[in-house]
Image 1 (cartoon, rainbow, N blue to C red):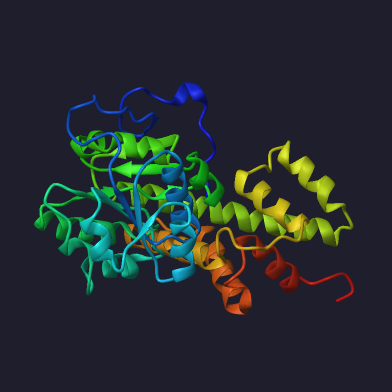
Image 2 (cartoon, one colour):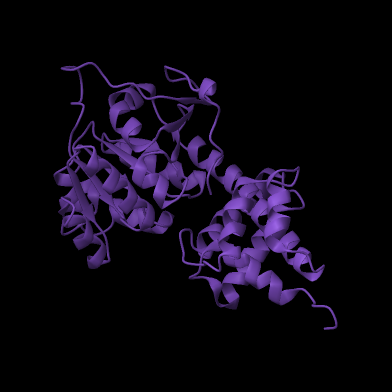
Length: 329
């Protein structure tokens, strides 16, 4: 899900906790060079977008993915393909892990031919998947034991924004690590949210955002189905919502896809199913589970189970349309 663009005045010139920042480049000749080899393991929709963005900006990029076609597409754009996460990590200064879940991230780092074995002390790993905070923390501890730094940096915004560098990053890491890699972070994202110095807080922030995004998306789909049952023109109804109190970014973005009949996956249904489940689980552990999150999470789970797992999460509209009674039905 994507965070709304903050007002320009809300950005700060220097890093600060809980605010959007423009990551400043380090002075020439000090610390890590401004441009250096970057590895990306997992070049699906978001990872490929990041790779293409960095390549266009002149950064050397090394990639690895289970899908050879994705690797070759990026090789044609100038990326170097590695035979394993270990091989990619051996040739880069910073490794970006952009896979689906915690199990995949752990395998990339610590499994057979894992990246951690070839990274050098002082180097950093940027963790971009939406995963549970305790999983981020556990991986950070294992990395620290090897002298490696973790940058907790879940992303938001979709493939197009990853490609043009306008996606959001929610960053939690030590200040010195952030400053060392400020140029890369700035290249990846024009909307960097410096959450805190505590690894895991990026993941916590992402879960909160994605739970609200899931709730808003289910709500938008539900009311558009209702509008159809009322005999309303869906396009005109959505126009009203977009200019009125019912507006949400995700509702507008996904329901526009519905109106176009476009369910090609930018964000698979399974991702919001996972993210909302993780958020609800975190709320339950804290004794802070509210009434809406579990309902939205259940909707995504049922839609995925009904055969929509491979479609865009906008397809939650199709599932609801099939579930709710039609007039005379």
